[in-house]
Length: 221
Ligand code: DX5
Ligand code: ZN
Image 1 (tube, rainbow, N blue to C red):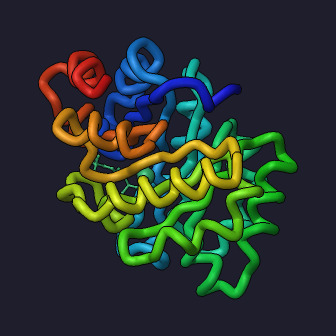
Image 2 (cartoon, protein in one colour; image 1 turned 60 degrees about the horizontal axis):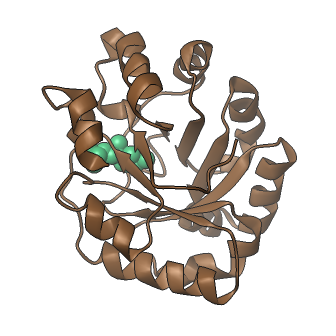
Image 3 (cartoon, rainbow, N blue to C red; image 1 turned 90 degrees about the vertical axis):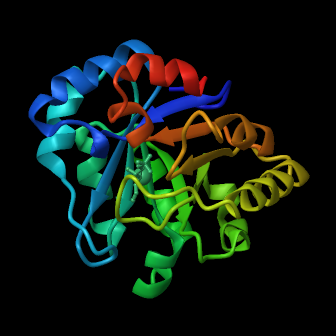
């Protein structure tokens, strides 16, 4: 899978109706670019979402790449299973690895060893510079524009500056690393985020809570 060409829309399944996941998958397959799958463990974040059964079920119908966003402690323990479940992209939080005492570079390499695109994430209170030592090992970085844990939160305006700073550093070093933004993204800020340097926009509520999700994805584009 090539994730590097144009702005990609990644609807977050967390905001979908879990009784009708097949319908959510149909919407992503026909109108969007990537499945964004939020995995939470109730320890790294104060919420529990879903895990392997949901990812494996979606894999059976997904015609677009699956992007697994791990909001868990010790992500390295589960990389292989998510890769085997069908993930094309796997990201984890830099601050989780720091708290665990593990090396983010090693986990990024582990993800790549399964043929999966590796990504590193920072929460809003983590300086974007924390990503910089690992950019060589990343195919994408994920800048959280809300605190990881829940959908439907308000976009944090300071995120634009972090996207710009990440883009500046990626360009300066001549790297091919995509910038993903996640949290509170909708038609009101999508344009400015792309202008700042975002290449992948994650959108949960603004897509799946909309009257017409397909039109909401078009509005984001
Ligand atoms: C938050 C998740 C997000 C969330 C986005 O922890 O990482 O992906 O589902 O949802 P919205 O777009 O509603 O902020
Ligand atoms: Zn996410």
